[in-house]
Amino acid sequence: MVFVALIGVFLNKWLPADQMTAWGWRVPFLIGCLIVPFLFLIRRSLQETEEFKARKHHPSMGEIMKTMAANWGIVLGGMGMVIMTTVSFYMITAYTPTFGKEVLKLSSIDTLVVTVCIGLSNLVWLPLAGALSDRIGRRPVLLVFTILTIVTAYPALQWLVAEPSFARLLAVELWLSFLYGSYNGAMVVALTEVMPVEVRTAGFSLAYSLATTIGGFTPAISTLLIHSTGNKAAPGLFLGVAAICGLIATLVLYRMPESRDQYRTA
Image (cartoon, rainbow, N blue to C red):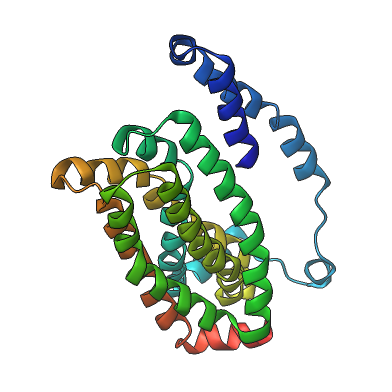
């Protein structure tokens, strides 16, 4: 994310606005395509874990689907946890340049610099929160940061839109990055742990993909909310709703006997 935002900064510095609109915006996409060969290389070289190799029975696709159906509640709960992650991620990354430029009327350079700072902030908080959740457990971290998001997301955006500036945009986005990184550092591991071991990868992937179908529309939903309500801080309400989903999912999943047993044996 830092790399992409820096490309945007450099392109906006080097190219006139008309050239950026005409063809410059395509450059990041072309650069992004360069990662494809490395993805194939990494995928081909991945090794199965020794624990997986030692298992005598590897479930078939039919068995996996039956287990997924039997554990649909855990998958749905996992989706609820991930919605908080996907909505907050797309809001502080993909939507920040548009929100800053089109809604707050700040310069493209300002919004892209903020995006760079968000990436660096995420790089700090994700591992720290993951380490904290290793020490005190996933549940407390997830609960604290969903509640903080519910309480502060909308007021923070109200404060920002009242007097838009680079400094306020940076402060609010760094705060939201702190909430996102701290929550996600624990959530990714929690989602792995609550899934039944025999369908852990499939369950994780399905829950995450379903949540991303909602979170991926965050920029469009945020824009729609602003236009339909006339409230520039409305995206904060959407983030608050996503956090409520994460809070409810955490409370439900960590009360389910299957999840508690899975957490102890993970």
